[in-house]
Length: 187
Image (cartoon, rainbow, N blue to C red):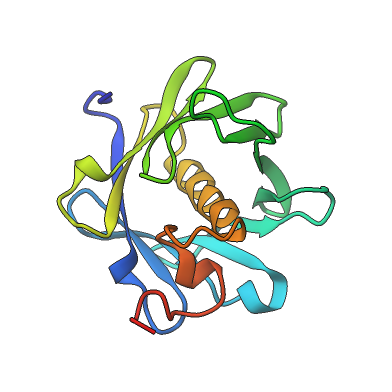
C-alpha cells in the first residue's frame, strides 16, 4: 500500500545508533528527523522521542499496572496510547493498541519480518516495510496523511520495545531498548 504524496516516510536504521544509547530516525531524504533517547532507560525504563531541536515529544515506557507486557506512549505525562502483545494472534495480528479516547488500532502482517500495517477504523495509518529501502538493517515507516508522524513513530518504537521484552533479537532497537549496544557493535 502506498499513501498519497502528503504521507510521510521515515527510516529506522540500527546502524545509526550512537555510543550514548540514542537512535536517529531519518526522513526519506536521509536527514535526521527524530531521536529516540535511551539515556533514561536505565533509570526509569523510559525512552524519549525528541525532535531535532531536542524537544521531548513522547515518552515510551513499560506499564507496571498491567499483568502482561504493556507499554505506554505518553505526551506531557498523559497516556495517549497503550500497546499490548495479543494473548492470541489470528491472521498476523500480534498487538492491540488502544488510544486514550478508547479507539483501537490493530497490527497486521509479518511483524518479525518488518512487513506490517497498523490500521485504525479499517484503514492503514502506518505501513512498515523493509522493501521501501535497500539498506539491509533498516525498514521504512510510512505514515498516512492526517495521522501524526511523531505519534506513529512512538507507536513503532513501543512495538519494538514489546518485541524486545519478548526476547526476540530481531528488533532493530535491541541495543537501545534492551541493555547495551552489543548487538549493534558486534559484541
